[in-house]
Length: 173
Image (cartoon, rainbow, N blue to C red):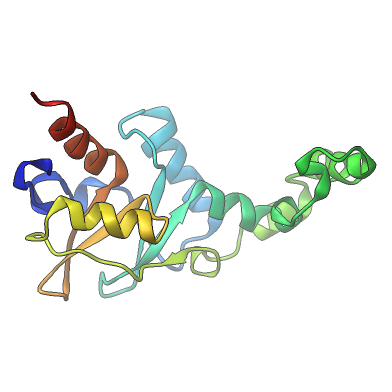
């Protein structure tokens, strides 16, 4: 499947994708997302930023969902109203009405390291694309870091490239 394609054939290079240091604030990350993804429309979904330490080791990823959760913690709490229950309507209305208030602006000054998702799963450039697909599906990931020799971060592979390769092999005659 995927015609023997390897991760290195579909990965995005380390400097081709937006990245920030772990000490950047949520506010700074939002600005980078606006420029890198939303304004330029350079990259299709998923919109995530890579987060590095001072030695340029990958620490994790920061998605739009992580940012929303960090800016308004109540927004991500389970609410029956979000499931459509009318008796909780006033609770959800209050959350929506106060979303991103002064408190959220204060929370936007937290470092992204407090809200990012740590990188735990990796592939090697020589791994088959099907291994990347398995890890992404099994661990519910949309981005997968690519490490050379289990040490050096060289890029990432996204679900969209993996899907493109696998779907091409399925529809070929």
